[in-house]
Image (cartoon, rainbow, N blue to C red; front, side, top):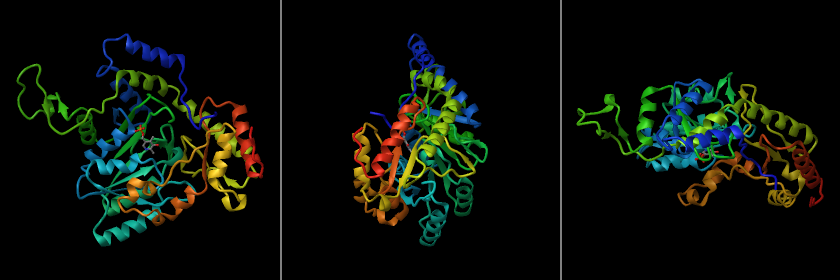
Length: 391
Ligand SMILES: *Cc1c(COP(=O)(O)O)cnc(C)c1O
């Protein structure tokens, strides 16, 4: 089976992990700060806070922005559930914004429309989570301008997008946001097995997130509210969590980060190859906005289902039967039973629903071989042209 995504682990990665295993610290040692510093330099940001997943990073990012009961967070209707769940963890409410059909990102036009309605009803969001679908940046300039106008904070969910750029600077530099979050799950651009980072230019937000990732406990003299009672002394200042990244994970991250630019360049070459291999088929290949340099985490095609005359489910089944693990990123979050149970009705986000009826993620990962890519394209061609390929 050709997977839709897969990690690449080199001998250098293995050596880095083994050297941590032979060292004194498996957690809370020198490698996590090294990973944070290296990543911060890479994405040109002041502060990077490493945690055990992007989901944890989203949670403490929301808390640092003081999202809580009575507040509302908005995010894209097409994203992984974690981009929305973080609001509920904080006791806040969540709502969704429709997508731009060309980029699959949150539509700034739909966002403005919804903000104008919400302003009249006195239900403006406190935080908007902008998700860089497939690794391509959202229209951050427009979203930031709306944030200034309507008074919300911005988190970039860049789980797909490390190594990408927007208007010539790295995603993660928070030029148009308060906090950016990355994921290092094995299917993402680089991996630490499980892991995430939150970046920010704001020292106060960084300090808050560092506190929350480790039980709300601090030993920093500048943060203590009383004088130290001895060398053991620390204070719990907030209700935090154990969201720490281990030294083992950070060592893998430090090593993987060396190859980030190569990985993204390879993804671009393979995306270009797909565009050529898929020419003439009844589908749209990814549209790239001129302001962005995508990290190309996902290669999503939109199939012309009406012209093809077969249901999307059957096309996905036929690809899988041929040994190609195509996928669909994502089911609109408000369509999930957990969210319909809260009263959401996905027909409120028509572009998200249209996307969900025609999308297919084709395999794309750095170690994918040329023959595998040719097989994916040839199989899709056969299936779309009416055959029921079994090869
Ligand atoms: C993968 C992903 C997450 C969650 O990342 P974890 O590190 O697995 O917690 C959040 N948002 C998006 C858009 C993702 O793709």
